[in-house]
Image 1 (cartoon, rainbow, N blue to C red):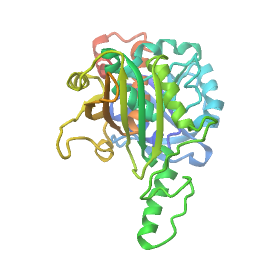
Image 2 (cartoon, helix red, strand yellow):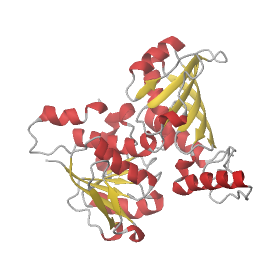
Image 3 (tube, rainbow, N blue to C red):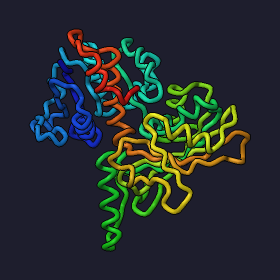
Image 4 (cartoon, one colour):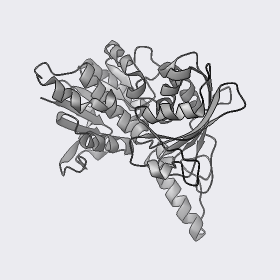
Amino acid sequence: MGYRVVVAGATGNVGREMVNILAEREFPADEIAVLASSRSVGDQIEYGDTGRMLTVKNIEHFDPTGWDMALFAIGSEATAVYAPKFAAAGCTVIDNSSLYRMDPDVPLIVPEVNAAAIDGYRAKNIIANPNCSTAQMVVALKPLHDAATIKRVVVATYQSVSGAGKIGMDELFEQSRNIFVGDPAEPKKFTKQIAFNVIPHIDSFLDDGSTKEEWKMVVETKKILGTKIKVVATCVRVPVFVGHSEALNVEFENELSAEDAQRILREAPGVMLVDKREDGGYVTPIESAGDDATYVSRVREDPTVENGLALWCVSDNLRKGAALNAVQIAELLGRRHLKKADETDDAAFDAVFADDE
């Protein structure tokens, strides 16, 4: 007996990816409902490569009673309206927006990093998915933190336009095309031209000069890994369609050589180490697109601090940064808490979620 699962925001980039990943990972769902706003009602969404078509329903009229879990990709404003209703009806919400991430009663989960924290979800029946850049960073940092205790992280991100949704991807495509044919490339979604350019500005500015995206990376990392870690981030939008990259400088309390770090990362869950000191011996965003792993390359010692490392981290932001992590949370929730009472084949059930160990 499987679960009754909702995907809210199923017509967007992340929502569609959630549906695809549920199918790819053969999530044990007996029934799946795909929801969106009224303008998308009746649209058909394919359930991965199964050939099965799902019909979009109106989230405004949907009754979540009797549904086990809902994966939300509808933005903070809509989440504020619908998440409490779903949670109160007994349907656990796994939310991709930023709305609940810093709520002390809502666990912020990356399954490879802090799986046990999910046990606090019952306070509000809501679980938060972290920011895309935070998610891949903490996957890379957690095994190193366990080995040598991180004191400080300095990160510069190179974030793809898909992080701004379909409108961001369309703007990069249209501007690139216009430049080639000599037409104007006026910005609409972004503050400046994104084609053949980089923009050191994601989300709104705060009083201290940082942006909200940078603030998210700081506070979310502290909530996931530990409040004592100092973090400073510079978040940059780059003309890449899919895949976020990060340059990390990490300072540790204890000594950790580049060789030991490579050995640790090679065995770490969710991490793929590709680190050959030769031309092409590293991973770029285009190679990460469509993959589940968080790739780490260019691990080397940082001579500017006593116990420091520098490394390069790349991941598909639509997958590990959003949809995949949400599905992994759903798997973790099922395995730890929502396991059906009449399931008798524990070994078979646990095998479905083996990747979360």
